[in-house]
Image (cartoon, rainbow, N blue to C red; front, side, top):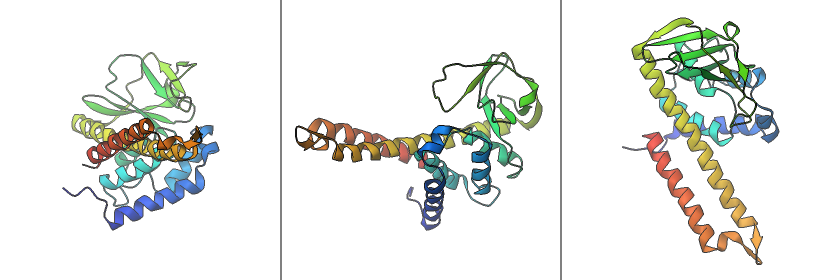
Length: 230
């Protein structure tokens, strides 16, 4: 199996990288997800890749780049929802899996319009206005506000059990690609810092212990890349 991107995939990867570099700097990322950010990503075709004729492998490369820039928001949910509506309209959607009757945490409650619920036997869309809850005061990720909801309404069904299984699998691949991007960027930043940071009049990257740490980071990232691409 050849896991190297072809020329078209490289062009797509470089194009989304240039877009993110130009529009999503550190200050904007730290400001968090909002309607304007969603609209720009939608306009650039991030959520409509499948409807536009690209493959799921192409989508993995795009989400890897999104992860490298730590672009916030329920990006996977919006992408999956767009595949249910042939790429549009691009509503702002969060998603949950295998909810049952348990309490749930809904991310970005003030920025979304709907929640996509992927259960074992169905896929449903729940309007944000149909439920309320309690804000989580200290979320694990400060860029991802959370709302604790005792139970969600059933919503309107948009897919059966086979659709739920397929969306769950594809959502896992896109999430893994995003995490791969974060790992890759962190490795690159760590190597660059090790070349610049000086201790005992030497760059810390020249110390054997630091070299081993960086080599381990690179190895784990490349093993993950092979798994995600496959």
